[in-house]
Image (cartoon, rainbow, N blue to C red; front, side):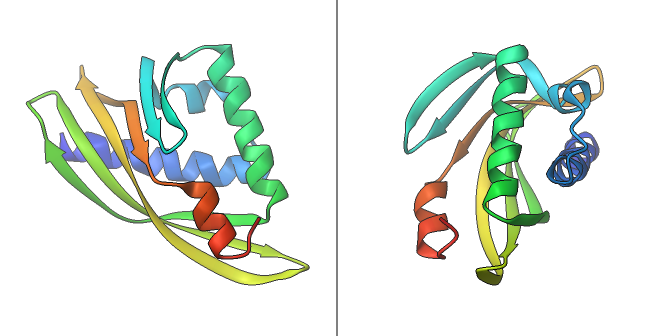
Length: 143
C-alpha cells in the first residue's frame, strides 16, 4: 500500500505542477480519483462524481491558482494512517509558492488529509479533508 500511495502522490504533484503551466490533461488528472468522492472543508461537506463536472472544477481551480500567482506546489512529506488492507488516510504536507509583480515570493505550508483506496494495485483518492485555504491565503496577502 505504501508504495502505491507514494506513486499516486508523485503523479498528483507532477500533474498539479504541469497544470499550473497550462498543460492540463483531464484524463490523467481524473485518473487520480475514484469514480465518486467526498470532500470536507470549512465551507461544508460535498459529494461528487468523477465526471465532466469534476474536470471543469479542476480547470477552474488551476486557472484560479495561476491567477493568484501560484508558481509551485511541492509535497514536503506523506504519512499514512492505515484503515485496513485496502484503505488509508494519507496526511500530505504541501508547500505552495506564490509570486507576482506585486508580491515577493511567498511559501505557505499546509496539510490535506486524503482518503485513499488501493484496488488491483492502483491507489485512488476517494475523499479529502482540508483546512481553510482562503483564510490562509488572506493571512499571507495572496488574496
